[in-house]
Amino acid sequence: MRILANLLTALVGALHIYFLVLEMFLWDQPRGRRIFGTTPEFAAASKALAANQGLYNGFLAAGLVWGLWLGGSGTAVKIFFLCCVVIAGIYGAYTVNRRILFVQAAPAALTLGLLLMS
Image 1 (cartoon, rainbow, N blue to C red):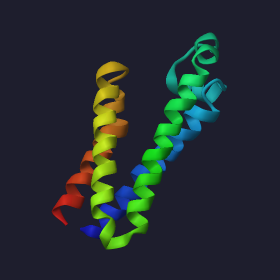
Image 2 (cartoon, one colour):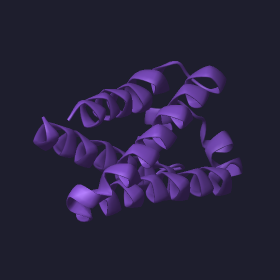
Image 3 (cartoon, one colour):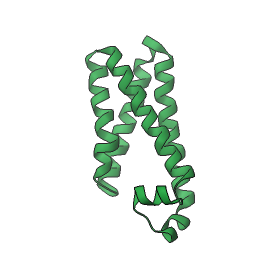
Image 4 (cartoon, helix red, strand yellow):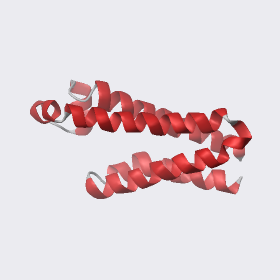
């Protein structure tokens, strides 16, 4: 079960790298606007905020990668960063879009559960 938990941790980390790219580099591009459902005007006006948010997603990814890199001694690091992802996902679902609950919080919660059971 630990192998599956580590694979899912890597997947959650990869998702957050993807979020970083979307928010920091593609926010005002057609693909980013389509994914987030924004207008060109809104995307241009909020580009700096989105880049900041993308940077935070990068920190979450880095923490998960760090936990994996530490091997068996990285369990506490992975738990901490997965909890951060779950909380951010719940808050995002409540304040922005319910879809965030399923895209961000649910995979991290599943991973956290498997990690705690292994």
